[in-house]
Length: 145
Image 1 (cartoon, rainbow, N blue to C red):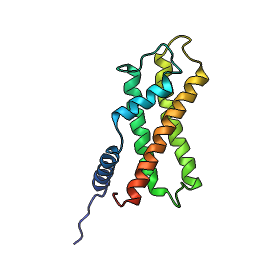
Image 2 (image 1 turned 60 degrees about the vertical axis):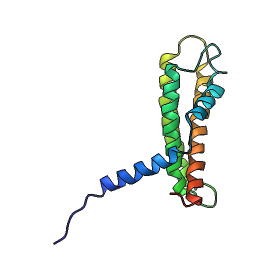
Image 3 (image 1 turned 90 degrees about the vertical axis):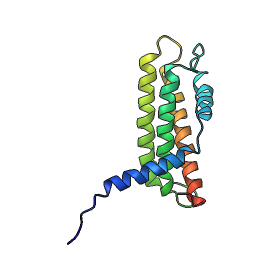
């Protein structure tokens, strides 16, 4: 008689382990510095550290980083095939949209123009997605995954 085994818990556990290993490649300080570099010019009177924006930026940078890391398994000949680039654009756009919505809902006044905020958010999320892709690919090349 056969035994039915649910594979979903095993997949979730394996994915969680991969994410934990990938997160070892990123530091909180790097995320903070990148956010300051990108957002401080946009919000000239805004102090980033210990603000509501810092937490949202940290969360979504980590989400973008992990997403990029997951896409690293599709890299062929040091580049991401076109079909995966399209999926990546959709995912990056969704994460950027979430951060933009959060920022535009909390930041008031003429601190920055709408296009300036969108540009900064897209730059920030894309930066961390690419960092995740690089880290995941590096781990793959070194046989650490």
